[in-house]
Image (cartoon, rainbow, N blue to C red; front, top):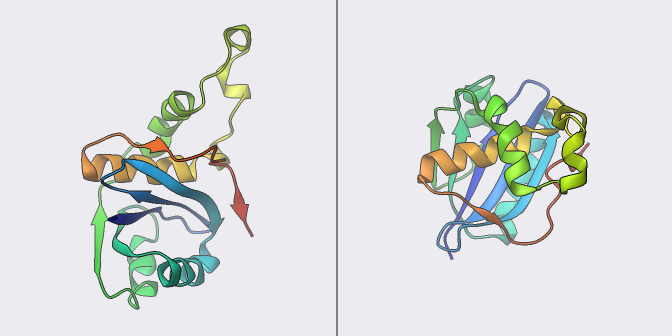
Amino acid sequence: MIKFISIDPGKYKCGLVLAGISEKKVFKAIILKSELLENYVRNLNAVEDISKIIIGNGTTSREIREKLNFFEKEIIIFEEKNTTFRAKARYFELFPISPLMLLIPKELFILNKNLDAISALIILEDYCKMKFTLNQNIDFKTWLK
């Protein structure tokens, strides 16, 4: 199984997804403090056969790339323009709300701080030119502090 990691880098926090490419499935989605990213990826790489890491080209992408130099396979810096904006719409594709809840403004359901993992998913989807589904009931707002 070919697995990729996608990262939406940030100065203080990063979104990360682990996905199976041939299955088009997301297996892990997390938001973590930027300072924890290197160890998290190192540990994940020890238990998963990761083929490639895709990093969004935004804030701190160069620094993140340098921290991940231990990764011996391909690391790609990829365009991430408008991913945070697009993540709001993608959130409701992944987690549709019930018809009764449509009366409440969608903005009340999500906050920008929780969209980093979905932004990482969009980076991966743009890179692979395909949509991914969730392997299980993943909470894209999960924080690792």
